[in-house]
Amino acid sequence: MATTLEKRPSKKTDNNANQTSHYVTLTTAVAIGLAGTFVRFIQDSFLFSTISNILLAIGWFIVFRVVFKIMK
Image 1 (cartoon, one colour):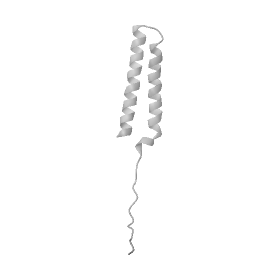
Image 2 (spheres, helix red, strand yellow):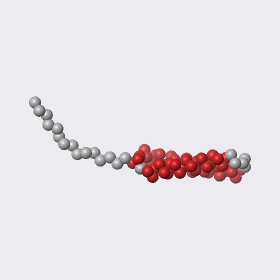
Image 3 (cartoon, one colour):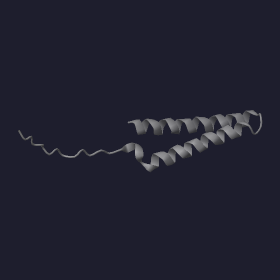
Image 4 (tube, rainbow, N blue to C red):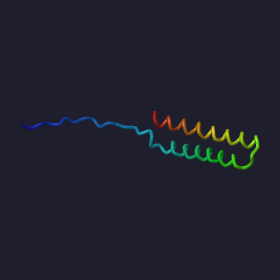
């Protein structure tokens, strides 16, 4: 007994995770975080500690935003 296969329409997948802009943004955010880490070791003062904490917070905020955008 012969079986016939029905033609199914092909699935269109939009793979959002492979967009180049995500990786460029992640690289920039990691560079900002690294700059915050290096500023922390310049001198032990309130100004440099504040700048490093702000840079680290900005870097992590961008990283989390992009990662959750990729997962969406």
